Image 1 (cartoon, protein in one colour):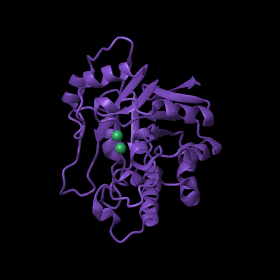
Image 2: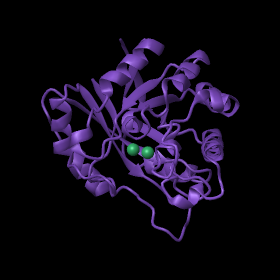
Image 3: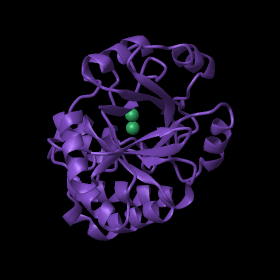
Amino acid sequence: MFDFHLHTKVSFDGVGTSQEMAEAALKVGLKEICFTDHEDYNSDPTKESNLINMEEYSRAYDHLDVPGLIIRKGFEFGLTTWNQKELTHFLAQRPFDFVIGSIHFVDGYDPYDKKYWEGKTVQQAFHRYLEQTLECVKVHDDYDVLGHLTYVCKSVHNPTHEPVRYRDFREITDEILRILVSKGKGMEINSSGVDRVGDFLPSADFLRRFHELGGEIVTIGSDAHAADRVGQYHKEALEIVKDIFGHVCTFENRTPIFHKL
Ligand SMILES: [Zn+2]
Ligand SMILES: [Zn+2]
């Protein structure tokens, strides 16, 4: 019923228009969506960052009206250990409903880059991603939910094509989750991993632990970059979230709204 992670052509890697994505959402039975385009600073200053063109953003969403569908406006910010000021500055430009904070770069590399995996075992590659996540959640406060924890496993260069398991990384994961809880942040269950590694990002075991530690804010997102993936696996995600939390969240004006399941 909700998809709170969607990219359109406003994102450097999106292919659908806002109208196409919204119509697709209605068609698959969604009631409410949120557009979350990339605002991503490259860790390597000599390389291009993938930033939102605000005029294009406003043109795509401000007059979009699809009867029967509630449309929220947000963005997905690539958290690094050094870009807190950039996030604060971006937020000051206009009102937003929702901010996903995601880790897309580790030691200057996107895990989609083969170089990230060189000289690391799979376990080391997973662990380093979680270490970077921990460093980022320690220093950032201006986002609402942590995006796709365990994104690293989805990379085409993960030789096992297996998801990250909570039991293999308990200690560092608990540190991350405790910080999220103490700062009042939520998590998302991101369905873009299902076709890649056969599980959600993160898998249910991480979300269960988050809830055990006191976490209550949870959103569902497909991370669709094209209309045919809008709302993908949202029913399966909803079942997991229902089982663990008994509710799911949407956001308006940066405030979570709890929907009992
Ligand atoms: Zn992302
Ligand atoms: Zn995304």
